[in-house]
Length: 467
Image (cartoon, rainbow, N blue to C red; front, side, top):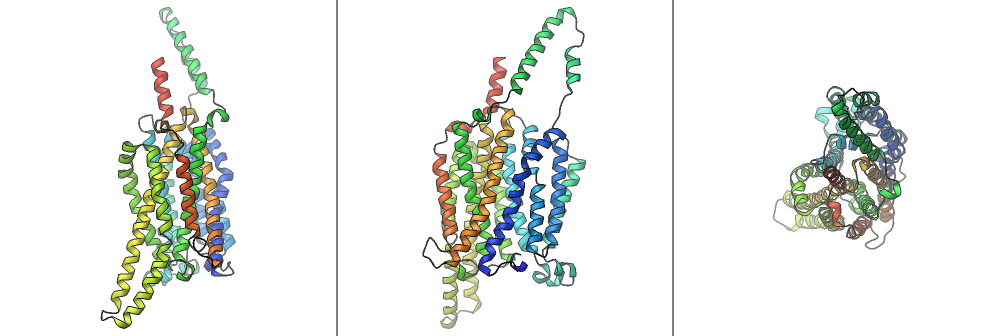
């Protein structure tokens, strides 16, 4: 898409502009995420979610009809400014869950994120420029010839419209407030003399409990050494994942001479679709069993251990593809096999290794992100601090989604422009991803095992027992 805008001076500069386009959304999201969160506390979660979905709908249409880089950049900025759903949906999950299922509910968030990220990328790759990819079906449709990226955006719009309809007609408001006057009227209602003492005692207990709940801890009290360690390793790990998410499509689309795979958009889309299928099984079936057996902290560390060798191995696929191509070209002249057979075998070998590496990468990402979500929730000393913990984590992750794409694009562009040896060649961006993950893994070893316990739930049970 960026190449079609003709904004890059050379093919090696495409990665830089693609990174700017990817970073525009989180930059603008970071500017307004706290505003949408506070607004949802005043007017409710449901209207803010509906505003966010409507913003997605408008920005998707704008992005689909853009014909210049700066128009696409503007559409991405609008999308980010109106994207308050991520922080608000965490509050909704907290309000509709209890101590028995809150960790499981929070584990659904990375599932939705991974499915959306992988599915969206797959839809974009498979349905982009349909007049050339599928000329028999779309070749006569002038609108898709003028706007080659409109079809995948329309598919995204249809999903957004479905969410809007469900939200308008099916979703109930989760932020429920009891009017103060009604509460006081209930407490001051006439009672018999024999029960007046009991009523006053109950009222005093309720008032003291509410007063204690309303007293918020200061930021310094909440940012304990354990919280700081968890957030720090979250940022470092998230930066590596954000860089790899941006690097893979660039790596897959780049020429073999530049250290890529030379895939077309459809090939990139199919490779990402495989990961999307794996996410559903890992998140819904495999992860709950692993978390029960090993705990969230151990799963977090296992995921990072899996990501490090995967990051280091992915760029070698380009070298393997080049060697296979040379061998195939040589074998066609001396072998008695049909000319098509070496090409098919080489193609199958590449795709087999690529799918295995992408599945391993998806597994590591699911383990890491699902676990860090659970660890963040477990850190909250009470339910009244859940918003602070989730907000802090979301702000940290938004920062990594800003820095990650830019860093990946800059490193990739620099590395392929200079003829330097390993690891400063096209492998460099993947080596940096592996190094960041290794650093995060080392930092996580200083986190105590107590983070595997939901602190807010324990506090509630202890309070109830004391009463």
